[in-house]
Structure formats: structure tokens, C-alpha cells
Image (cartoon, rainbow, N blue to C red; front, side):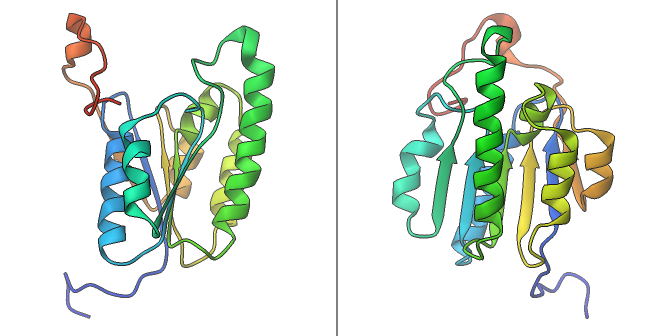
Length: 180
């Protein structure tokens, strides 16, 4: 095979992590590329029960190839809501596992799964099991800050978004269409 030639693929595991902006956006960009090639995409969001976000508003127009599912409670994970948040995240993980293994998708994105791990809503071992049990042909993407070293080792591609400068530091709030 010549270098640079596209090939039929075996699904890989990608992680987009780091403290910089752009992890969800990069995953959405990959989803858009996949949709353009006729692949079926599931964009499964953990701990993002609020919204609507811009990706929710465009999702209907990207049918039938694009499915977006948001799970969790609106608002931030807080000590007083931790039990409810964990219960919702565990239900979401089961739903994600079922959809991942359904044979319906070529690209499966678990947006903010790493955040759910960081907050203790999903156990690291559960995420590693998701990777180990993914169907061979499905591309699996995990996003969120602070990816554990074991997840980095289990992945085939890891991209770190590193914040160098951010306008939030100057008090600019999230903007519709850019951050949400």
C-alpha cells in the first residue's frame, strides 16, 4: 500500500483531552467529515443535560446519519447532586454501551466521558471496558479534560488541547454559536 492512500478502516480509539478549548469542536468536525462520507454517527454527550447547544440545533438537519443524545442534569456537578448525577451517568453509560454495540454506527463519540470520570460519576474501569468491548469496525472517540494515563495507553490516537490564552480570563462569557 502506498503511503497517503485512503483504505477501508478498522475502527480506532481516539481521545481529545487537555485544558484547552476545542475538544468537543474537534469531535464535531470529525463527525461532519464522517457524515460527508456517508458514515453513521452517534454523538453521545455525558453531563451535558443543559442546553440547547449549537450542535443540538443543527442535529435535525444532519439526519438520517447523525444522532445526538445529551444526558445528565442541567447545571454543574455539585456535592449535593453527586448521587443523582452518578445515577444518571451510569444509566447513560449503559445506553451508550448498547448503542455502541448496536451495529448502527460507524463513528461513536462519547463527549465529556472523561469529565464524568473526573467527577467520579463513571469509573475508570468502566471506560476501559467500553474501549475493550467496542466493535472492531467502529471508530470510538472520547473527549474531556484530564484523561487518565491508562486511557491514554488504551487509545490509538491522543490529541491534547492546551490553553495558551483564553478570552474567558478577561471576563468574556460563553458566546452563542462559538462556545455553545
